[in-house]
Length: 452
Image (cartoon, rainbow, N blue to C red; front, side):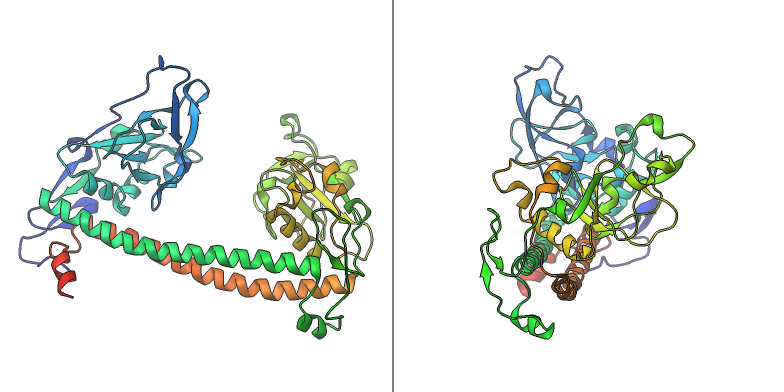
């Protein structure tokens, strides 16, 4: 659906390109007000609010999280008041592209001062919300931001960005069209996300079953193992029955467990600077070795505070228990106190099997089981005491080969679904941008839909 192209019907308007005849452009400040209302500092300390921060807003899904808090203990940035019909747009960390319409908000909904709260004036609120979410507008905000690690712009600069402005009836038609179109796309996206969730559940269930009960009969036969082993009580409260020939020794009998070196500002410079790994550098089955910070670790401390190929690194905090095996790397690399280094004490351990064990433990709540309270940090003392299943090494290796094959299949399917999600998201953004800039003619979309 394109507008009919006739001589003189289109006018080039900088980043907007050509606009249909009858459309205009206006700076945002002429069709809206910005940051009209703010909570005063004299607000009752016990005032209860629902707070929205920059990281809680997604350009596609809108506001994803509202955090309850009281004024007295709320961050100083929790001040912007919003109302129905507003649109919030981040002016700090603009690379997050955090934009969301405000629809029927709670009376106590407050957003960060990092947002520009844009209130329509002489423009359809729904159309304005879509215009502010168009690729052109968002990318213009990003391009006008200053700073590298914390890029930001200011509301005044945002207010000077030009918007395409069709007649009011066309604004309303475009908004209705986009409501219908994005609803269709969002329904497809929801299905794809549900499929991702099911694939993750399938992976978790597969790992949990295999590392606690052994290989399925056919896979066991193929590996030369007993397909239906006798089972026994594991003797561990949170662990069900395991094959009778498996053991459950405490982790300290299988691996040395050492926390890394405490990061100190005084140690960032010194004679023996080497790169070191942080919690964030260790993701599931992946370790980042690039562009690492440095810390002073003397060679005499290398055995204690450096890693070697084959070590297993486990996150002490954050996503407790997240783990990855150290691969090949150049030079000497240390590791911070936010990580545990596990090193096998004997040759009867396959670190890959232990990595699957830790994935199962972290994702099924094992670290919070057995009468232990929820833990924000997995101490070395706690970790050493855990009793995990231990098959003979040849069976560990067979389980690893089986799980790697099966989880690779699941990962392949997940990548395909994620690609479809990315394409749908791009299509959604393109439809919004094309509609609000007049690149597609939607004036008769409803009658065309009814005729079809």
